[in-house]
Image (cartoon, rainbow, N blue to C red):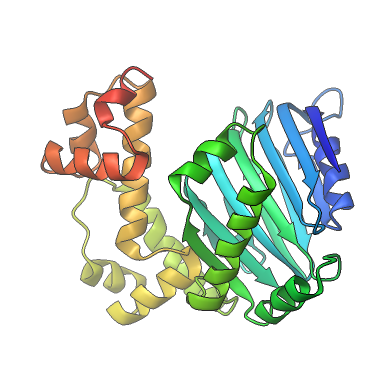
Length: 307
């Protein structure tokens, strides 16, 4: 089954979520005069022969909205292809940080609720793959997924560039590409340590979010683990392990990601020069900044000046 919809409201997303057996809630942060949450974009929903569900969407919100979904005994792959990366939250307060080109794999047996708040004008092009063993008709694949769901947690893997290129068209993504992504997701669960095993205590979450906020507010500073740990009231080793558990990234991987994302925004829409971008986000040498930017986005920072 395959369908392409031109979206105008969150109700259409809610209907799809119910088809996928989500418990969902999608409402406006502030109700519009028409009491209808408006958005604009395209959504393509496909059910593959193995009964694996695929959703490709390209959506811009017209007003701030709130979305939540409860996943039930399934393997879910989330991938942001282009635009603004949403941040998802678990009910215990931890944040799941999305990165362009990096897929997050959620393995859950018991219900797991994710939620996010999208500001007005938020635009993203993203892909969701869901494999629920109770629905998959291939017995061997269903058993493999059922076994891997024992390792409840959130995992991560880099997506090959050629797959991203195909997925980014939102039209030509073929069954073999989806199955390849699913296979990579299964390997991530089987071979990689969980980024978020759902075990971080709430007090630790508050401490780590304090560190996160400091990093975001001072992207241009030369941070060190010793100072960050002291301010959070924990040891350096605890900071390293708990930050990864809560944020899904190492401390300095998160900082580097945020620096480069901020630099790209400055280059594309705020008139920054390459030298200014490097300086504003904490790079002492523009050449080091250019290398990191090219590694992250696949192009030189000067190319963003013409975007």
